[in-house]
Length: 54
Image (cartoon, rainbow, N blue to C red; front, side, top):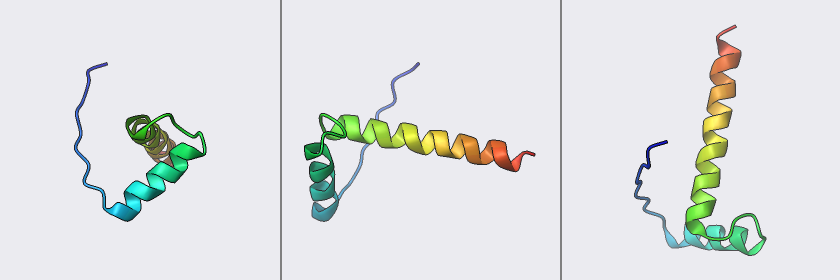
């Protein structure tokens, strides 16, 4: 799979939310948390489109 670079602009509140989520052990760092969120989003979109194709 090709690597894609994305750039996020997050405000202080969003960064604090990410840091609290990381502190809970959901992901080891911000980059990993973003990758997890993108994977989950892609999976939900895939399921959504598969469900609407019926």
